[in-house]
Length: 76
Image (cartoon, rainbow, N blue to C red; front, side):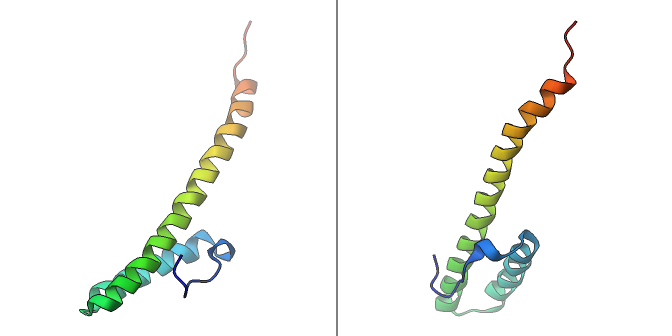
């Protein structure tokens, strides 16, 4: 994790998407490779957080989805 990034688990998904968009614009605005490297590190952390959240949600959906599907299927 990048040392300047706080606890991302407290952020909402929309806030993370907004930060990714903002940092991507700043990444392409600068020509300084050191600054780009720092921004890329933060972007990687934010994208990893989103992937982790998505995977967790998918896992929960699959667990709960199987229960919901059982009630839809009627055997006679």
